[in-house]
Length: 444
Image 1 (tube, rainbow, N blue to C red):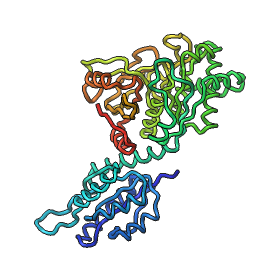
Image 2 (cartoon, rainbow, N blue to C red):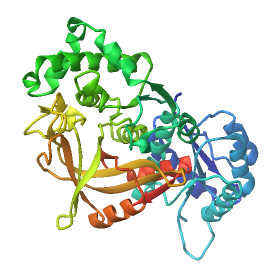
Image 3 (spheres, one colour):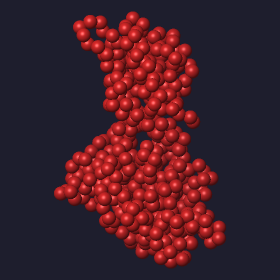
Image 4 (cartoon, helix red, strand yellow):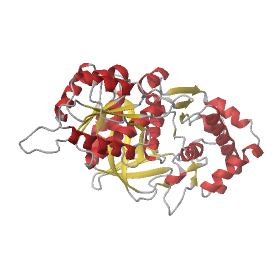
């Protein structure tokens, strides 16, 4: 589906049209600079009839409805009747306050539109200000990014490979929940199917994949040959399954099956998939994989996936860690992506490094309330320039808010123990996405 955004400038001709025309032209130029798929009318839509004609020409995933002047509720009612997509209301600032004529009266129009949307049970976004204001640009950007992400979710195939281990049911997804709330199609396959597929490859058939890994991972040659070759066959099995089924993200069972039934962990395979652009979470945490997908879609960079394992109140930091599935591109430059062995099973390859720093980062989790409804966890901070904290892959986040309060409240609020950490501040986009999806956003 091709993404499309519609700019819908509504009003009536009885206000100061010269002022409205200037704001219309500036708004159109701003939106065209932010989105190459924005559909704009040739003129302001100063009657319901003009509005109706324009709406018949568009099929957007986001409608930006701007009061270039006041417009009564008939205008937004027409939009709601014809378009089934998220709406952002945009109020223009009065251009002149001089004791004379009210030029636009855009704000009263926004109240009229907002009242109608709320009465009809429609969630919407809102921004106030002129096209030249930085805050307006930021809000429009966040809304466009979130709408693009929402549209891409409706095209996403997420594979759930195997069942969650005993005691890890928080990550087990339901296909109807996924489709109803996010538009995501959930594919389910048993882990043994990919294990058997991997066993069926010869070493020669998997040699290409071993070569790719050797170029990305330092020290892979130190891993016993049997495990290196097993990893290469498993990598080929996962990669080809994803390609054949148009899989855009996945969660995978890992322990104990890949140690007991295959003899080689899947950790490094998931790391390679993360670098290839297929967000991959371990321990079959499908909602963790969905969180990673959102982060990667908004930043263009793989997200880290892991447990919060340590906190330092004095430094205001939280350490996130996992056994070794982080994308190679996240490794610190002084070490690169280093091969290791699983911290408990002592079998490799896994990844074993500290992650590179980033000035702005977002900790996020698409999870569930105790009653089963979805919710979204958000916290922001800085990924510090820190070495590996434990065997496996790790990063340390200095949080904007008090780290101790984040941990205390998150535990008491019953959040799942897996989080994604994005390389970039995507909090504004995720807040808008949560509103568009109708799920609560909890910012810590």
